[in-house]
Length: 106
Image (cartoon, rainbow, N blue to C red):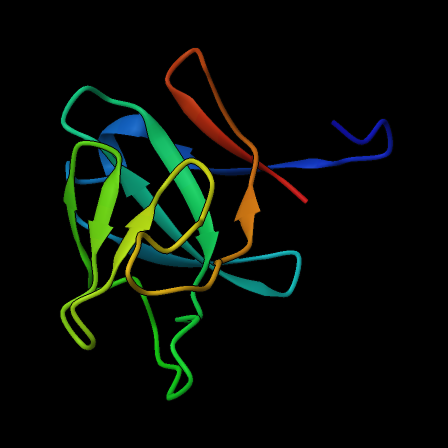
């Protein structure tokens, strides 16, 4: 983790619906935040790595995989890596949850 990294409060954990993406602007960056059914939180750039682009926030979460409804791609929430046979990667951001608050590192 970068020593100069700043964490920004994204909200309270209960404000993020389970398995549903939410778009936030954090430090000028459009971020898609996902909460899994076991309360893990992931933050990814809201930009689809598919050549045609588009947002990823409308994807469906199952476990640690985001299922993209536009192109039928599967993206690992922890790494941002698109699962085979497709290729690509989404930028991810560190997340921490402290005392019920969600913080995103930039």
